[in-house]
Length: 453
Ligand code: UD1
Ligand code: CA
Image 1: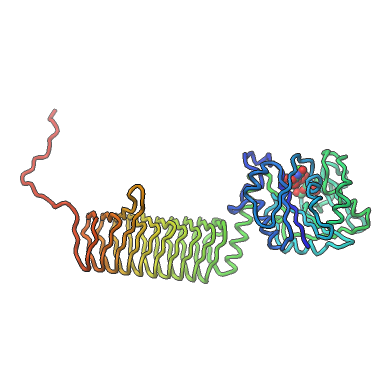
Image 2: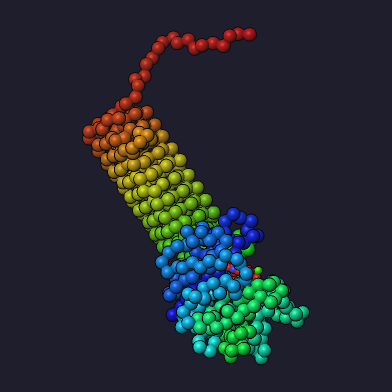
């Protein structure tokens, strides 16, 4: 049985923010939510989040199945924080202690650590650092861990130790129930140190077994915006590396952001400065040009999204071409071989096979059949100020440039709409419809003249 305790009460003064630190984000997701996701992957029995600063906000954001909140109204130290959950701890459970501001911890590392817990042992995650400044040092005697000493409490000799406490540990519930009430704050910071457990374990004949993370980034905490940005790049690089392993060509993995989940087929190419949000699925041989933002969309084989396009909740079948500078808003569905060109905005629209909206248009609340050609500057006037209405354009319709289609309206198959028309009535098959003022000719027209000086 596994109980997880996440420390998330701190204010994060150095973030200089009105928002509690653990709600600041990495890859678009709160730091603490990364930690909660890992906890779920471990099949925890219960996840207990210790909240203090901005508790209400944190609780609101994190509420979910299996999550309990425990208040730590005054932050008197990491040991004091864990003391707050004592009444909720199960003596027989393994208790894993995590930090809401250490977002990149890996599930495998934690699994490994939890395996070190038994009736006679506990697990401690440590790492050797070039520069251990600021961290609690791991003190060993004949290899066995005997204590953790905080930087401010270290002797000259202890300051030279490079193996440090990451803070992450796993302990049998019954051991925490025994040891935590005995913590004192008799130290340089006047805090109840969780780290004092280690010496207590030693005294009780419980061995402290250490394991290490795969890299430093896993245990890096965020205290300020610089560290946040640093971790963001590390994390994005990890995602990029994984995608490249899966066969994605990236023009520059350093200029790439995935804030969600990106799935790629074979031979896709992503040019620089693209942002992927939510769940995005690319088929095979998809090309995404520079500076695109793509959110919650599915793009099928051989489709090309040219530079500077923005897609949200769009579904594109194979062989489509979109952009440059296109905006596909939620509900945009393109059938095979459809084309959306520059400065075209679509919303809640179905574009049939091989149909084209190539220039400067707004097409919303509409259904387009196959082989439709929509000329430059076409607008579906879908909104009367209160209600939205639908425009239906059947197969093989030709919409002349600068047409306004006042919905609700249905254009029948094979209709040709003359350029500059304002269409308010539906058409019948294969008609030419012209709805513009007649051109008049006035002979010998005198233009107004500027008065001569
Ligand atoms: C702690 C460890 C140190 C370790 C380091 C790793 C202790 C005494 N020291 O030091 O050995 O090397 O982490 O980063 O544990 N928190 C609360 N309530 C509190 C105090 C802290 O929720 O009363 C939270 C903080 O918000 C933070 C985390 O616990 O997320 C760590 O607290 P912090 O005071 O930063 O610990 P360190 O001094 O860095
Ligand atoms: Ca501190």
